[in-house]
Length: 302
Image (cartoon, rainbow, N blue to C red):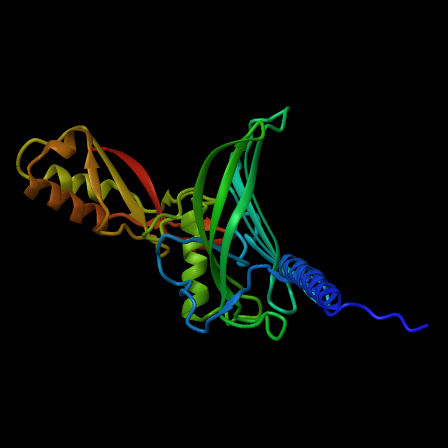
């Protein structure tokens, strides 16, 4: 017996199937976007230059000359994933940032943490990266040498699981592995790290050398010359001076203090020139190498 169906019934079944397939297709798209919707790394050969001072925090793999601390680590987790770590530590506070990237240059994980030496027993402060913009100058899966990059993180701060604020952290990094250690870029980063870690000041003067400078010459001629100057001379000469690596006093920065610091400019300049001319010093040393340093000196005139 042949069973027939009305046309309108067939049309309703087809319509229902279309609707069901459409919903399934939409769900599939959403799942696909969720699974593969990570932030992409931007590749730009003209990424922000590392060797300039700007609003980006700097990280590199040139060690702190005192303890070999490196603020940049690049590690391959597998053939298809790598991790870029940026870390800063002052000894009292610090922050740690890490990016995990797959071979498709997708950011599969970003972490940020800020810490202090105050122990948080309840672990009540946490951080979450809401948005990330990461730019590299080259594909790190093809070449690590010369890799540099910059990033902007939007970070949410939580206290007891409650959002307290959202702020921005900007960083940049550069790998100097196998770099020419006489290159301008390497020397710039090395000097900046010395300043950053409080080893030298902006003028390359070592603040805490291994060995402080000491007077080499006899200062009898110096005191005799100062006594011959016209006008009043205090009994003690006090000054802050910079001793260069050749054992000579630098003309700048130079500051007479105490009573000598209140004498007229002409007399101060005369004393300064005599001090430079008639003293010789054993320079300061770091790792047994002569370096520039700043010291206070006191010399009796009487």
